[in-house]
Image (spheres, rainbow, N blue to C red):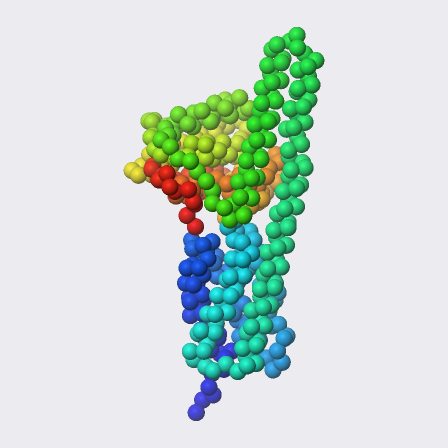
Length: 370
C-alpha cells in the first residue's frame, strides 16, 4: 500500500488548479487585473507556490526555501504596471491564500503546523512584494523630481532669455517677433510636459483617463497638428490621407498622440529623411501611422516601450532628453478610445507606430478598457 500524498505533494500537483481558481477570483474582484494576459497576471506566482510546497517538506519551518528575488519580481512588475495599487497587490495575495486552502482542504486535512507554514509564507510573500512595490514607487517619484529639475529648466531659461532680449530690441520688430515665437514654443513645451506628468500621476492614482468626444474630421485635425510642428521642426512631415475621415473622438487627445509620435520621429529618426503620417479608414475602424527612417528599435526593447520612464538605447545615446512618459500616455489615450497601439521597426523598413481605434467612440466611454 503506497504512502498517502503529503500537503507538499498535493500543492505541487495542484498548482495549475490553484492558479486557475486564483485568476478567476482576481479578475472578478480586482479591476486592474481584468484585461491582463494570463502569463503577465500570474507572473512569479507559480514559482512562489513551489516555494511553499518546498517549505512544507522541511523538517523545521522558517528556512524560506525561496529566492527573495522571485517574490520581489512580482511586486516590481505590479509597481511598473500603470494601474496596480498597493491594495490591489495585497488583495492578490489574500485571494491566493484563499485559493490554496480551498484546493488543499478538499483533498487533505491540514495540520496546524502546515496551516501556519502556509500562512507564514504568504505573509513573507506579501512583505517582500509590497516592499519592492514601494521601492519602485519611490524610484518613480525621484525620477519625476529629477525630470522637473532638469528638463523644465531649459525651456523656462530660453523663454526668460528671449523676453529679456525683446526688452532690449523694441526697435527691431522682426527680431522681436522671432523671439516671441521662441517664447511661445518654449512655454508650449513646458505646458505639454506638465500635462503629461499630471496625466501620468492621475493614472497611477487609479483615476481613469478622461476624454471629451465630439464629431471630428481626422485629416483636418492632423493637418493642424503638423502645421504647428512645422514652426518648430521645419518642413519634415508628409501627410498621406486621400480622403476626409469623419468620426467621433476626443480631438485634444488624438492631437497629443500625433504630436508625441511625430516629435519622437524627429528626435530619433534620420535627420535628412521625411516623416510620414498616414491616415487609413477601414470599415468601422481608422488607423493613424507615423513612420520614420533611421536606427531601428531593438526587438527586446519594443515590449518595454510603453513602460513608465523607459528609454531605449537610441534615446539614451541621443542628445535628446525625455520624460519616458509620452508613449505610455499615447497607449492610454488610444485605449480610452477602445483601440490599441503597435510598433514595427527594422533597419530596412524604418519604424512605424500605428494607432487603431473605432470610428465612433461613445460619449460615455470615458474609461480605458482594462
